[in-house]
View 1 (cartoon, helix red, strand yellow):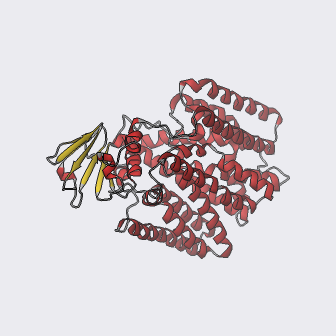
View 2 (spheres, helix red, strand yellow):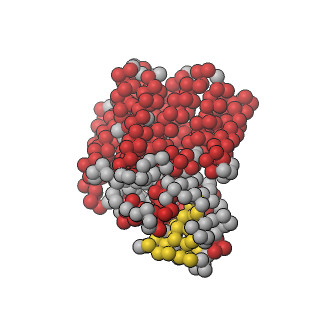
View 3 (spheres, one colour):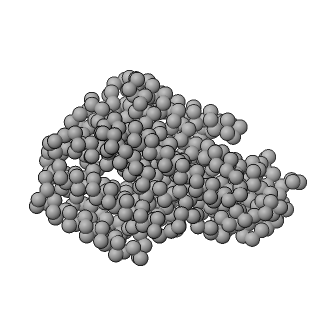
Length: 482
């Protein structure tokens, strides 16, 4: 059960070990900056070149840009998301069949960067089915998802030597084996709904209205795709959250919001709202009731998140200013701003102006959050003791001897899934990654044939009989002569 990010590990394994942090950040920055190109090409189809350029600059200046500092696949996934959207939308110009092929290929590849891309494949299948509402649309949806699985398995075979059919191996396997905790899912869903209302306000409803009014037009179709993407990613996030909550309720609290799994779709709602305002001199929503309701809900939902939910710079960068007691004045200030705008909108603004206000507030809050990230921390990855153990390991040390090898396994704690991913990254290999079976302990029966060594991460205890060499908080189990 390897950690399922094979394409990510494979590409980043080519980075030089010398000054590895610098190379990580450089490649991360390239991926984030490169996303501006497909974002521009998508926006250019609906607005002027200048407006599209401003939109593309905003996309790469969003809080997700802070992930340039982290050893995580998000920057690569971020670029893949926008590139995939552009490829699919361009393919639709030729034929729905071309979009089916394009979607299956790009999302199959993207799932080898982050398995969460399965939600994107589901979203595209849903879009293809709803787009035509006939047997042809249903067949297109089925073929697209089937091709997604084939590409995922085929490229996985090229990278690992065996076809990768599972979309939930390694750290995600446990979440797929649990029953659905309905109450936990509802609590988590309420938090994410509040997050959407807080960040997007009336922009949440605009794509629905645009699609309903122009179902056959390009903007209507794009709105439908945006809706499908957000709903599928949101459903995947809630399912994942309730699953890990059942596995480790002490550390994976159900009130913890993993917004980074779906925040990629937020700029699409801004784009649709801006285009609706730009193209249509009349209000994009003729009735004031719905945008006003969401504008009023924004400060209330923001207060609910502040009181009852957990957000942070990694889990939900767009809402990072809502987390931590030291940021309480900032959170209250933004809630106050939203409340003031709601009062203004109630008495003075039209429905069209309400949408314009929500666009401005979304951009303002996103850029303010990104600026806060830049000011709060230098553009260097924090060298925690865990990371430093790998980065500073001499070639002759226990950890140094494992770098580049793919004949072993790394075993970590389920409550510290990020450590498992970082260890595999620093080893620059496609070694297996597993969680300790139970109570953070394992023995020789948990080591399959062909495994030459096992790296035991801090907090895990080995109870077997093989030779063990400790190095700091790490331990290496050697099964055969090196």
